[in-house]
Image (cartoon, rainbow, N blue to C red):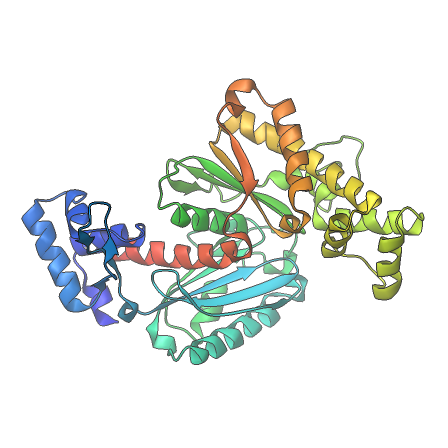
Length: 398
């Protein structure tokens, strides 16, 4: 909407505070403003009059007083989030307060190349917008998470190991063919970290998100901001060596944790166990499907299969070995683990914790919490929409 592009810097700043708060009172919004209370209240009144924010349903306060809170108005428009994995694709349309309005996920292979994959993304975006009665011009911004290092300012992947055809591809220009909304692209785990940051209303300043799927990556939040490094490759922990005598990784080195405990490695070990007669369940699945996936190992592990449990524990210990280096170096307060391994349940998490606590310095783990990401499978979509909203608001503040 046009009013979105005509905001004053103060109005954009107040909108940003409303976005990062799960309901905030007028008083609370005014107290955090860097101007007088009267000027802040005037700016809030202007935002309400423009329809950019609205009053939320009243809630019962502890003292019995019904407190009014503010939230971003649906009339602002909608956000589009795209979570791209090595083997899957998710697209969602969300309201400014992160309410999911429409969502779709399907298998996809990034090795098919950007032209084919992004053509499908554009189709899904149009279909989902139509499903919730929205038009392309109502899109505030588009956020995309991709499984590789990203040059954030150019919105381009840089030498991505899992998707070589995407190197320097102009994703932003591709989507502009159908959508006028600004497009932001970031590494998929950075995007997940942004989603967790939004969930916690920026109350947690230093934490990491580890994604274990086909690849293994890390999103780093430092002082309340995603840290991308000098060239966008911060958090590329999948190529930390955990066994100098391990198998060769697709990056050319040997013993990378991704080659030892990533989704493809787990599936490979499961197939070896099945063919060796170590698991009747895995053998049956292999005979039926012709191949095994991480989801099959998770299914067998939850059913109590000994071989599958051993594979899950081994992967957890190796991820924990890598993670111990991250914990010793960065000293985060929390580690959130996401990706396909969440299907493994508590056994994988226990193995990770065991390895981290065994290998990390006591001071680094004294208050450390390691858990699965609370946003679970929604982390990528929520994070992508958060990226779009955050950057749209930052653009409005300039």
